[in-house]
Image 1 (cartoon, helix red, strand yellow):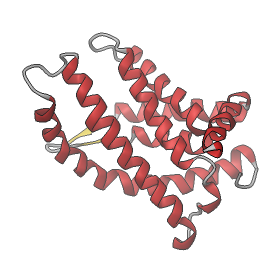
Image 2 (cartoon, rainbow, N blue to C red; image 1 turned 90 degrees about the vertical axis):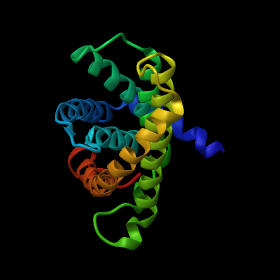
Image 3 (cartoon, rainbow, N blue to C red; image 1 turned 30 degrees about the horizontal axis):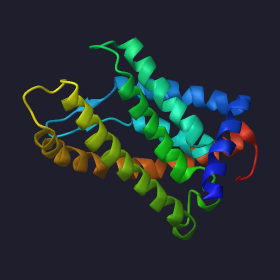
Image 4 (cartoon, one colour; image 1 turned 135 degrees about the vertical axis):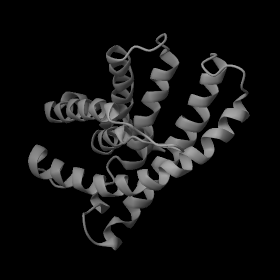
Length: 200
């Protein structure tokens, strides 16, 4: 339990590191760009904006990930203001970064581009993080507050949830391979070109 809370304090230290802040700003910008190129298909959509938040969470931890998620939501609203601004959705967006930070931060020592034995632990953590993101954020919280606040009129929570379930499962089939491919590459680039440090 002590190590769990110390993870947040270590992550807070990342706010003092100009390299971490630069990298975070870069991936927030990338997330905004990716969001513009969402592909809407008949049964689901392809949107990899979450990948940028996952990388921030992995490299800078839950505290920075939480802040980055909220910033993405606020900047996204400013860039494309549709409806009223709802702080609850900003907090929910922050939780996305928190999830990836809690599960992936300081676990990089077992992550490499090649070798299943080396990547297995991190891959499992990444899959769990994405599943929690989809279930907690997309299916439960976003759906609940969208119905509660009247964004989806004339439908109950269970009706909307059942409709989103298949869609999110289909999206996971695309999201997870992309996540597993990106995280090792992002970590390798981070170590070689930004920090020059070994795994922390």
